[in-house]
Length: 128
Image 1 (cartoon, rainbow, N blue to C red):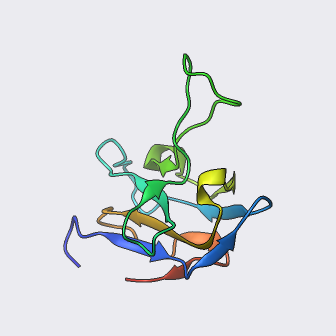
Image 2: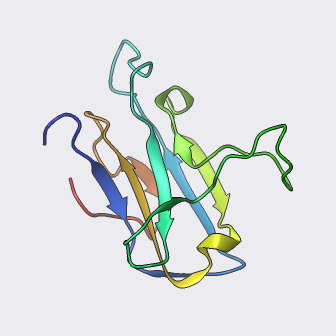
């Protein structure tokens, strides 16, 4: 695999509804003595309700001054936030509620060895 090639985990189609939660643990950039996260590309968590024809972030960020029911970051994860194992829990939003929702976690991190996600039983390796 060349540097810059996409690596990803993808689920099989899942029935997602009002009580659906995605939970996983994530670590990034833990293999290097000197942190390299200044230039590391992020890890993106996206979903598709049209069999992978189009993808949207699971969570769009909402920060002041926008009006939201609660403020939160987008489902884009950066190495500087995940230098040690950290749990991520997401109540899947209304836009993801569909009988055949597919989730994908992707990055072009040159050193990412998937799965570096723990938990999240629905996620399985699609490409290594």
